[in-house]
Image (tube, rainbow over all chains, first blue to last red; front, side, top):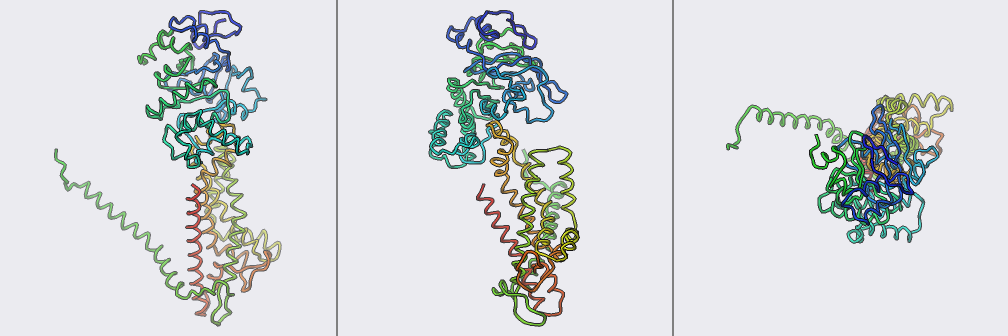
Length: 294
Length: 281
C-alpha cells in the first residue's frame, strides 16, 4: 500500500502484516542499511498519523500529514523554521489544546490504536503516557527531588520509599544521578543548563511514559551538554519511543533511526535516517540537508 | 585613533540631564522625608510603652494610651484581609489562568481598575448604607468590610500582575506531566508568584491600616475595649483624626505618637513580609 505523504508518493512497497510500512519499505531500498537496521525499522507502529490537517485560526499549518511512528525508535522531525514540525509534535500530546483557536481540522492521530482526539480521551492520561521535553529547559523553582517526583505527587503517590526509588531510577536514567545525588534537596535552578535539561528528561521519565517527545532539546545547550543528551537519547530508546524535533541536522543524523523532512506544513519525505542523509528521493530534501535551501 | 575626552554639546547636555534628574529625585524625596521626620520628631518623644495597653484619656486629663485603638486597627485590618485576600487572589487566578483575554476577564479587570481609584470614603458610605443603616449599629464588622472593599482591587491587580509574570513554560511543563489546571495553579503558578503576591497584599494592608474616612462611617470610635464584632471600635486612624483636632495638649501629642506607632507597624509588617517572601524563594 502506498502512502501519500504531502507531495510525495512512496512508489515501492513490500506486503507485510502491517498496512503502513513506509519506513520499512523505504529502508529496504536503501543500499547502506544493514539487515539489523531493517529489522528494527520493521518495529510495530505506535503512533499513527493519518491525513492530519491542522489550523491556527484561519491559517493552515499542516497539510494532510500521513505517516506512522515506530516503537522504540528515534524519529527525528527536520525542516526549516515554520514548517510545522513543532506543531505536529505538540499535536501528539495535545499541547496545542492550550492555544486558543487551534484545531485538527481533518484526519486523526492514533496512539496504540486509540484516537487521541476522540471526546472520550482523558488528556491528563494521554500526557502521562506521552511525556515531553521542551526547547528551553524548564525545571520548576523547587528542589531537584521535588522536580522529579512532581508527576508522581500529582497522581497522589505519598510512599516515601517509592518516591526515593523513582528519583534515583529517573536520575540514573537521565545520566544525572552521579552529579546531583548530594544536592537532591537544593534548588533545581542552581544546576547548569545541560543538567537542567537532563533533569527535565528525568522528570518526564519518572511518570513512566511510553513515548517521549523532545522539542529541540539541545538548542540552548553547549556542545558538551548536547553530546550528553544525545547519548542519553541513545540509551532511552531501549525503553521508549522517542520523537525529536531538531534544527541541527548533524544531530538528527547522529541520534535518530528515522527522519521526516517537513516543508511549508507538508511532509516531504520520511525514511531511514541514513537513507535521507545519503540518498534522499526528493530534490527538496537533498537541497535542505546539503544547505542549498532557498 | 583619538579617544581623548572632548567637550561636545551632547556630553554637556547629558551631564546637565544627570543633574536635573538628581535634583528632581531629591525634590520628590523632600515631602516624603519631611512627613516621616515630623511624625518621628513630634511622636517618638512622647512615646511610653504603657500607651500600647492603656485606654485613651478623657478630655483635659494626663496619661492614657491607645491600646483599644491599636487592637481595633489590627482587628479591622484582619477582617478586611480575611475578606479581600481569598476573593482577590481567586479572582486574579480566574483572570489569568482560566479566562485570559475573555470578555468577562476584561470586564472584571476594568472594574478592579476603577475600584482601585475609588475615593475611600465611598467604601465607607457604601457599607454604611448596606450594613450600618440596616442593622442600626456601627460595628467592627462593618469597618472591616469597608477596608476589605478598599483592599480588594489592589490585591486583584497585584496578584494578576504576579501571575502573568510566571513564565508560560512552567505551566506547560506541569501540564505536560499530566497535571490539570487546578494542580498547575496550586503547585506551580501560585508558589512561583507567591513573593510578588505577598508584596501586593502588604501594600493593600498598609493602605487599609491608615484609612480613616471609611472607618468613621462604619466602625465609628469608642473609648473602651472592644468586646464584640457587632459594636463600634476605636482605631488608630480615627483616634489620630479625633485627637488632632481638640484643644488638649495631651490628646494632640497622643495623636502624633499614635501616627508614629502606626507608621512603625506598617514598616515592620513590610520588612517582615519581604523577609518571609525572600525566604520562600
